[in-house]
Amino acid sequence: MQGEESAGGEASIECRTCGAANPRTARFCNGCGAPLASASLRPVICTSCGGVNSADTRFCNRCGAALGPGSNVPTPLSVPGVPLPPATSGLPVSYNPEYEILPPEEADHYEEGDKARDRTVSGLSLLIVAFALGWIPYVSILGGLIALIGLILLFLGRWGFDDRHHAFVLGGIVFLFLMIVAEFFIAIGFVEAVVGDAQTTSSLSGLTSTVQSQIDAFLIATAVVGILAGLAHVLIPYGLADRQTQALLWAAFAFQVAISVVVLALLLPMVNSAVSQALSGTTFDQGPLNDLDATSAVYGTLNVVPSVVFAWAYYRARGAAMRRA
Picture 1: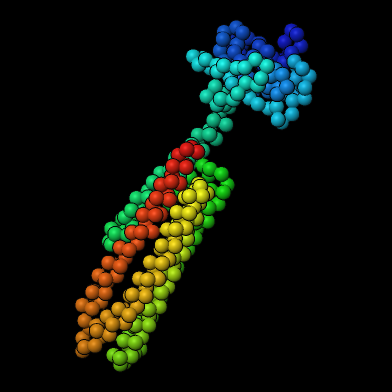
Picture 2: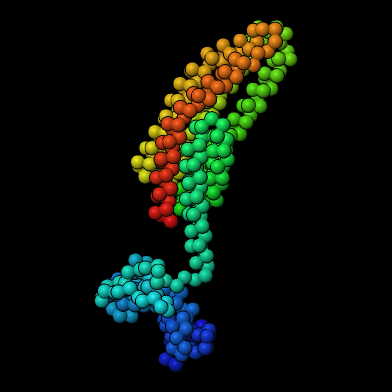
């Protein structure tokens, strides 16, 4: 068993296959050739002479040099059927994970990391599709559902990379969630305000001015929330982005802000005119509001510009994630 002393006084390890005692530094059993558990203990290579030492050695058994943290270079461990990589005499052997036998708990850790990175790549892929659909009227609803799935995958896979990526993903998703909640309460407040004004205002002219002001406030608040949501789209892949990708993210955000301001400036006068026409007769006329909705949908197609740039930036971030996976 492990910890026993061999005949020469050296610590030995027992083969789990045949029970033979072997030197602690052995990788395969002397009796049956089976891999030993000690193979998971990585030997230390001396950076002075290239000598191989056991994992618990403090000084090189070949030249006597101290084996500090800088000397802890793992050697490649052979496995049956796989040849060892070539080594240079007198120099440390280069490390290649392909030849390493990992302990079960460390192997599980790497497997979980691979799964997290795969979720990140899949999440970014879905968000690219969502950006491609998000600017199309009515189809944007499908894009929103795809984006939700992509965000869930990114959230689950945020541990697959460094802490910087984790922080950006978590902060961006939380910020985007807060903007969605804010949009919901803005819509609820708008409906309650319009219904309340309709119940308390007796004159049609008074109701017209009240509804116009409520719609104006709703459109402005919605535009502000949309701009802030665009900032969340910048943050989510920022930890994976190089400088060019970061520039694309900020360019997409700038396009979104500019288009939101222009569309808002065009719609506000149309809203006042449509509300006046709808409430000008003795009965409510839905036609002007339908025309306003159609015009708003046309203006919304201008968002194709930031959507395409965001999709391009996310595609580059996806490529970076695949290279680091």
